[in-house]
Length: 343
Image (cartoon, rainbow, N blue to C red; front, side, top):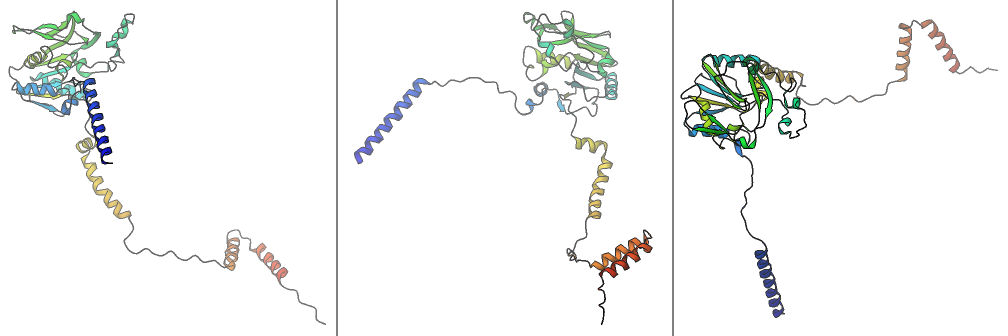
């Protein structure tokens, strides 16, 4: 019996060793790279890498959820959104801030549906590539600057990256704008960047300030700021007005604040009134504390009460006493026993 157990144990060990050798000869351990996307704040903030780059360059930069107030004029304001939450009044305040010496860097509001940018059908109608009035929503900023969108441009691969030159800078910068809607304007432009006479970035002098309007700001977002000379070109754009910006505000989303925050900012007197009125109202409408009163025991009513109530109703409401009394006496006579004849 003991010899059989030892034999089974040796057999199990041989099977395990053979399986291990077969696995090692069949499979090989290799390292592969897999794109897992951004994590943490970089997953929701497209300008996270830009903020880290600016801080590494000694330029204070901070993230802003929304443009509730305007910074000092020595601050560069970057708005990488469609500006849906900026009303006409807010745009006017923003332009007045630029006139006083502020520097605004933003992108054009583009059509919601960018499917035409990837349309490779050569037979497609060329008019479909142009943004229509229904596609391009009204934008107060572009209207004030006299800027309209032309057709979308996809540079040829052989032409990318584009070679750019900055005034007073000896190095030629390489930038890849990928695709863009051409910017068309009749206003005086200080400088521009273009591809085959199709402008994709405009620098417009306004008052004492400067507006840098790009067709898109993809080249400074997380996925592309480390490509080519994007970071260096971004640094030059920041210094387009101020030799040394004191601060940079980065706005990357158009989301409205939570409802409770809007209510507290705009309707706090109403909230305080409701906070007092609701508890007091509940206290006033609530029953008093104490033992529960027992419900009265139901009792059967006497037939005479029903007769009395019916008679009273007929007598007073319908004035039928002259008919009720004879009917009652007739009924009594019919029900009363008749007297027997006596001998």
